Length: 632
Image (tube, rainbow, N blue to C red; front, side):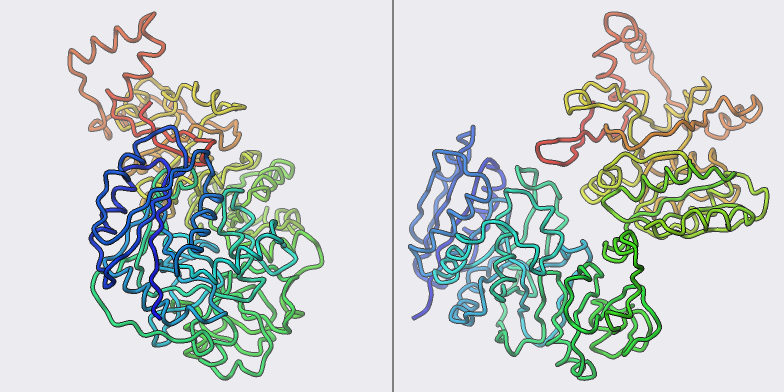
């Protein structure tokens, strides 16, 4: 008998999001005469969601509304929604910030018919990953002629569970309430908070050796709009299926597209696709994120640094990376090595260097004179970051041996750029920036120190705000969000007209030290006649500088326009005369009034950003662990 799933919508305090989801459900195609809809609403201070759910007309079957009288939170709420499977053949669970394909229900029916009785399957996803949660790299499952692939990752953006699948998980969860990292569990689960139900389901998949079924084209996708447990703003959006299709399903045992909890293809699949590997016992680690001490196989297939004794090796330029292995593309990037031959030094710091994820940051350090304590302090502040970085040290050739000896025992990726003796600071900075390879870049003089979470802050902002390419922090150290909210941001904020005014008054700070950039913005702003001044003006000509109201580090090095002689200053003012802001009489009068007591406190803080068209500042929301844009 065919399984008839009910639709269960999990809602909390986002009425606009819920309305969008319900509209997409209403417009979908249903081949069954009656499709139950349950809207489960977690308790909140607003009644808007309940009113919307009550008013919503569901023409496809019975509608039921569950309103919880106490606030459950995401984890408990999803568990409660899953428990509704006891009353139906199966359930389709949808959080309120999703939208569904018109064909989502038809896909669910056919996938249930194919996999409901398979005890190796613990759930069915409507969502297809295009970005791996492990390392945030592009992800695409290898083509095996089927419309699905399998992975030991739970789906949270549209998922289907049968009674049996959910009850098996609930019975297991009753005796496994904490994650067991003695198991081979991916490290990214450690970063998910107490509200995550999904990390427990992934733990269950690994422990029970079961899998989720994923479609190759999404039947649901997310908006990840601001909410209690979402701050990514569409990083994981996936392309929706918009036309009807006939699905081709393969069983788990026959599939050649099976992935583990790290988004890595399994050796069993690679052995089918490239028989040359079949004689080896190996672990796949193409993202280089698995803990080496947990690997029990004799060999490792990886991109890690290694010795030259590879049993097999392949190119790595094709996407997805396993395609290079499948097609047996000749190269030396991906290699099959004995674990014992993988280069791991005896010290704990070198082990850390091997097991951490690949770096996303380049830190450029121009060294004019050898001050070992200052340089060590800067490098150690880089090492304390949660993310790895490449440190590009630019120095004169004569200093290189001393620097190499100093950093030899440090667990930091370093690139030393050697210049001619007597090369000035600005040219060293230029040479270092030219060698910076990672997606996010900053630079520091020796002695400058990063704040503890500086990289995490920059990554958070760049991933969530695609339009931002240049950020700077503030100098104040605050102990609470309330203290940060009182910081006066006007001294930090810049637009081109403000640059001109400050330059004319000899108050312009043009240093870009400890500021963060996307690699693309750096590449576009390296003038041939490089100086810090020319670099700054290239940046401000092409990009907006956004101020993050948080301290990113500590430096005593400031370069102001007062260091320019009067002739150079006048030349710059003439060259950038088009930056000058033409103030109307009414604006000048308001400026004068707001600069005088008692107006010059709050009112000036409010008015100037509007008058000068400053970019919004980035303020930190501790409750949701993210940044939001604010005009003031």
